[in-house]
Image (cartoon, rainbow, N blue to C red; front, side, top):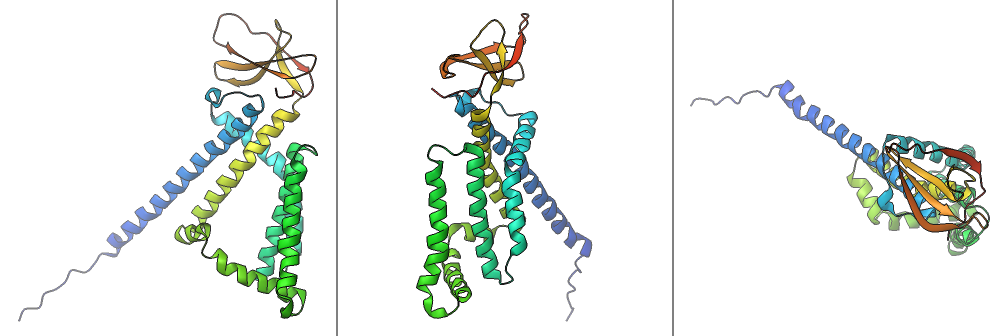
Length: 271
């Protein structure tokens, strides 16, 4: 009986699918990073223009906006990052306690970010008070009281984290994280978090801005944003610094020169 020989697989041909698979993964990551950069810039611009009551239809995103958003976010996150970085030097050796420590320090850094962006006014105290109560009641009091039979406080915290890990494992975020490669999941989370921070930073910059470019032939018209061939301007009441509802769009391609002067008029107040 004649023996049928099966052809040997070429190792180089086996490597081709893996090679293209790696290229496909890199391409998806590049697409995610590019889309994420535009998303973060969009959230930054929407927060900035939203303070003046401008419609998002006037918004434009280009490379310059991405760089402005990145620089502003880095500036605002510097202090919370330094606090977080300093605190991580005291990380406990136990993995569960380390995770709990990072989570609580992250919440404290969030409080610093809120105050650095919005200041000590308005409802910011309520948000920060809610975060502080969350840390005290759920992160400290709850494990000490519920797991009192576990002995030392350290063991109570560990028992609480072990119990919570079983619940967290079934959450949608953790399920998606197990399905995606770590680099994709981490990048996606960073894009979503930075997008939220970008909106806060954009709003804060507009709220605390005091110097504007004023159109010389008008005493109450200031330039808010310049997009390629047009300048987005708003009007305000010079006596009260309240923003008015009128929006002026200046065409920069017109033959008439637009003369501007930079002046310190103080913080504008939304209508």
